[in-house]
Length: 408
Image (tube, rainbow, N blue to C red; front, side):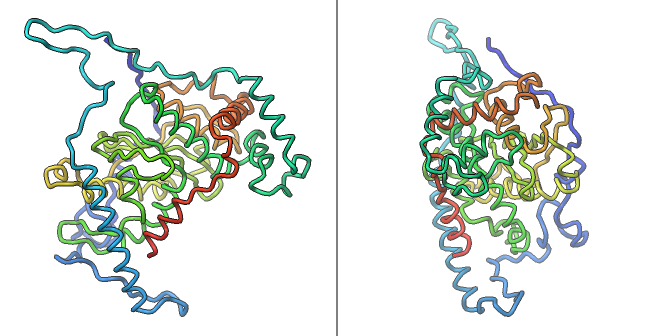
């Protein structure tokens, strides 16, 4: 009845016996439950007290920390109330997941099923007319002839020159612009994608979750394992209220099965992450596996393996919904049989992995090839120029809100 695409990968490591199954409590002693990170052995049947450990002489006072914790709790409660109000509904199948049959009192009638993946071709030839329009527009920039290292960062010639130059490291703003393009396309035509139950997150998600993981581990849970400190804005991601400029208002688990996000490793390497909520599994698409050792990748992935399942339980709107999930960490793998990039093009490949996978298109080593690095960059530039003409000036203010929610 329908045409399906199956992705088959050979993987460097599937962490069913590796980091995904490793308890954060392993170093804390044998009495800590494996499903609960860090110091669950000290859990009490009450909310945790704010930490008062002083790290240096310039730290805030005890009173400041208590006020900060109170503000955090207030923001957390408000966000959770919003999330639970949005998620308090029955999970519904997307149109692409429903049966192609309908019943009446006499017979079942076959409904014509649309093609499963009628979306656009991510490797279509570049529109040369649009590419010339972009080039002409860039020539009108007052910094057109300025050396790259002297151009202002908000100069459109700096922005597009970085994007279009082979082997140039893509900045956060370039990565997020392409994610925004995909998000807009998905919002306008979800039927073009392999599922109507997915979302796209920008680099801020991974950056903030990794940064906040220590606080999550160190916070003291209640006796049931809940009550830990999640990153600021985590509940907004869960409820689909950020990014503020393109809200989906779809709740993880209830409306969302698949999450795509880029991850910046040490400001030296980009990787793509596909989180599957139903499979409780994460796939990492890495164009240069030698850039991150297995041990380093375990550390990078730890925050997502533990905090995503935790948030599904913490933010559930009812005990019945909560029972569908588990605090057990997710597992992850890093496939090794995907197209590989040259150093400098990892950002381009990261974006192409996400784009192809969300469209249900296999990673073609003919199209995602080292020789095509420049053409892939030019196509991205034209797509952004057409669909986000102000991308070079855009500033994501959501990070300010997230840090405010976290820091008080």
